[in-house]
Length: 425
Image (cartoon, rainbow, N blue to C red; front, top):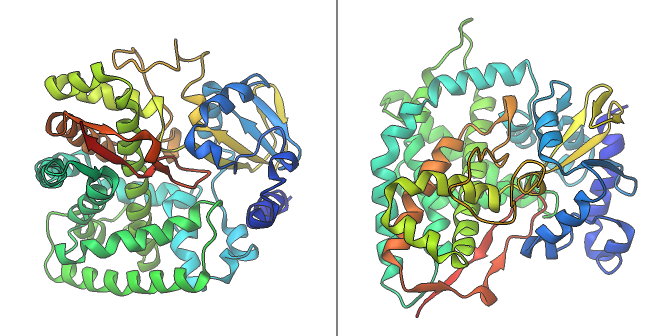
């Protein structure tokens, strides 16, 4: 069975959403993952879904829904659970309307590639994107964060997402890649457009997507020419030089895909982590104080905040061959929807899962994945959060989130505010 045979019913529902929204809850009962209320607070729904079992078949969506930590972890590390979506990009609108070279931005990416191609790509990127890369960036992350936060703190009212949490990850990615600083503001526009492709809730205009891809490709050609002539101590220079044991390097297509994913995934998940954390801290002034006063609290606080309100709420896989998950027989070609947000609050894995406890032992959330597809940028996102969140707590001690005016990202995959007003009290 080809993957699109089970994916098409889901995708048709998504793209008909504007016409079906009044009845979508009824059509997709018992679980509508496209419900806008889930953007605001998904956790009561997850609690209800767990009562159905750790994995269960959603007949209306033709997919398995997995809510337990153990079973999500099992699927994430399974060698027969695929991330490849090439078939969908070829046959399903609006993906199929993209030009082939623009589709390749996604289908050639490490995010949507299975072994052996994924193994080669991961090995290449891992040789370039090392722990030293993150360590080298820390002073610049702190410098950028301090500049943004200091400016925000001067206002009695400020949108913290727009002022700090949206630009910070983009600027860090620009610094990481060695992109000239005058190009950094353009990165967010491209990232916002490209993110629509990997989130099925948000429709996109193939023409606009093509324009964003073409602009990115033109800019990338300029950056490659610059770093080829003048290599620096940056990731783009390293990616241009790195080779695996057989001498192979990243192709131009693979390099384009890698930069696109770094921009999109690195920006979206980090800004979501920061925004979710700030909303959570509003109800936990004791944790705010510890973050402001105790440098050693930053790392465990970030880990617990990742678990408590994950920036990645759902991911998915397609079974390449029959597999057993939690006693259920999953057929080849069937889709599995992994509710990461639910797994991170699984009471079978975490004691008092709905409480924020930064002293919790053995946190290990699944927010950045698990197994061979574990997020390459996870360490960088954690360091950004560990630097900027204490800074916000120290520099804006009297600002409070105006919770009634927070606006949430419309997404099935990601979670985070897109408007985060804070007001000096």
